[in-house]
Image (cartoon, rainbow, N blue to C red; front, side, top):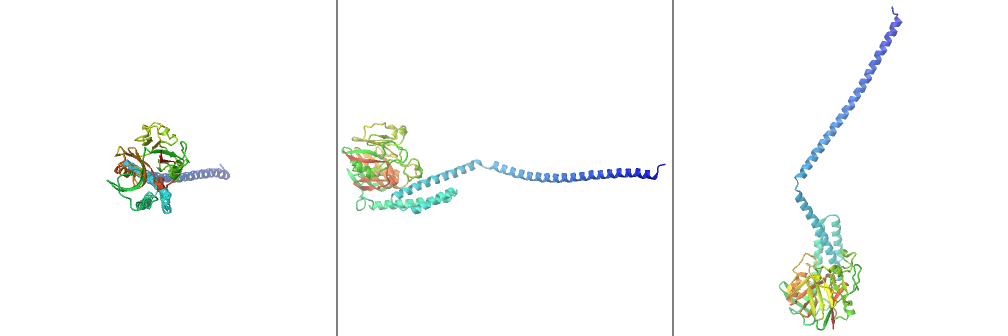
Length: 403
């Protein structure tokens, strides 16, 4: 029969075994409960994340549907219109700046206009296009007023070399020499300073400050210097060129790119004018030719002078230019020309006209052919002294020399 000690010893082992099992079950249960808690937390987080994703998906779907339903053609057209307007405002601001430089050449106070121009540039850089356009309209108004005032003073004969009293009305150009007169046309009356010369006694030459083609930092002279060094009795500024004061002329200052033959029989810019449509005037011994395109003229050195510029104003007595897209040509100002009627050649400056209006004035005077020359701050006419200008220094000039 088992003893009490043996019984207790046996039951103690059983108790410890049961206690171990209970502890083991408790540990497993605790671990399981902890795992369940963690899983529940993860499930809650996943549900929240799913909810956020569903919200974003709903918003993205709405945006996609809105975009799909937009009229992309209208949007693109509006974008194109905005870009075009921005480009035009920028281009017009450059034109205005160049007009300011022309006024400085004419000894006008441009300080306030330069401040306004700085405001335009700032507004453009800040993408404030409406403000830039408003300031630009203001600036152009100020420029126009000064040019109108200069034209009014010229009409009152305050310009250098103008005769006393109002310009006499006459639609007949002078037989020879210089005349200041008012020409009546179908679009109004215009004052003109004009010099005529008969090719029987006069040679028309083109003088250049450079001896050959020049692309940048080219030499220039005043019209008076050209007249003096050639012994000319009259002269006018020549073809369009790139003044150093113009920002658009950086890297090509004082250069010109149209066809020209100077008094030394040297052709300029010949290679880039083989197919040129720029009109050209040719002066020879007793004759002139005005050709609609430089490509129609060879490189004959038997003539006295060749100069190309645009536009051709008159051809065969008919108006050849009625206007264009260039805002500078459409603005009022003092403008230079060279033309002919038979064997008489004319140079001159018409005041307060657009380029298209010049053609009407010269037609009313009875000229047969005429070519527009440079204008703005380059405008200058010499006949025993400056009748217009002197303007800025220029790379070439048209001169009358007695034979």
